[in-house]
Structures are given as C-alpha cells and as structure tokens.
Length: 194
Image 1 (tube, rainbow, N blue to C red):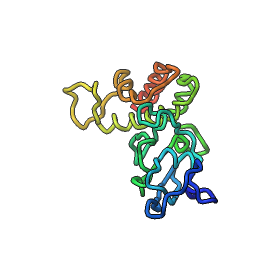
Image 2: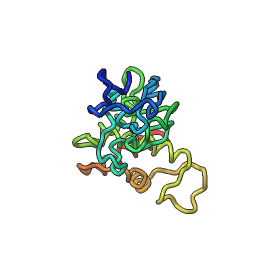
Image 3: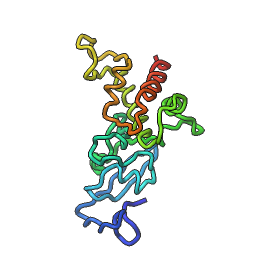
Image 4: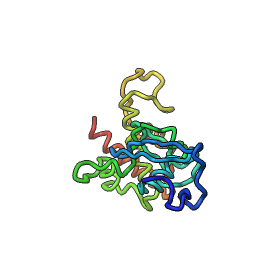
C-alpha cells in the first residue's frame, strides 16, 4: 500500500511531493512490515490512518497536547501527530489495534477499561490505553515521574499509586472526564501484574 492515490495526489487531494522530497520508509506496524513511499513532511498519525487504515489513534489537537494520537514506537509512548514517519524508518509501531492478543483476546488494559467503564464517548480511549501500556513499562523500568519520591532508589521499579498514574497520564486528555475510572483501570492491571 503506498501513500499516493492512483492519480498521483497525496491523501486529502494535495499534490504529491517531488521524488527528492520522498523516501521509501519501512515500518513494522502491529507486527506487520510495510514499505511506503512517503513525503518527508507526513506524520506517523496520518500514515497510520490514511495509508494503513488503522483509525484507532485519533487526530485531536494535531499539536501533541491532547494525547488522542498516542501509540507505542519501539515500546515507548509517543504522540504520533508530532512524529515524522520517515524518521521512524525501521521502527516497531504498536497501535491500539495491535494490542489484541491471540484469537483477538483483549489486552488486559482494554479489558480493564471495559470492566471499569473507563470511557464515555471513547474518542480518547485508544490513546489512553496505549499511554497506559507505556506508563506501566516505564514504571517497571524504574523511570521516575514528577511525583516520584526524591529518595526512591534509582533504576528500581516505581510503584504506581494513584498519584503516579495521574501524573504519568497527564498528557492524555479525556474530554468527557472519565479520569477516576481510567486510573482505576490502570490500577487493576498494575495490581494484577505485581
């Protein structure tokens, strides 16, 4: 699947960039390899949604301020609206669609969000879930946050209490205000893992 339409126009009807402003880019998205001919200015979010039909990540603010577009790149959470796709050549990208397990079993965080009713409109939910996956991994790796106790041992797992979860997810906005249930869902999964 390429990034141009049959008439040579880029998605959205804009004229295609000249060849010198394009690069073959290989991304491994949800365990599947994709080699795309991409305009250097295209961001990962647009490539995921327009070229790969992965619409879980949402276009919210397009400025990296709301987190609706959060995905994992090489296991770390990123705002896909700010990542130039060509800069990620060779990277592993996981979207909310890629969190499903064998037989399409829900990821524990997806299940917890359902069980805790941690969403209303659902627009931010894919970004919240991907961010929460990243949060749990960051804390397990010993990465401190702004609220981590200054005397906490460096490099050791950081316990995810409610304050840690809130702080670490503060870059993901929920327009409906489901924050308490989101924290509950992350606590459920973090508690089951420890």
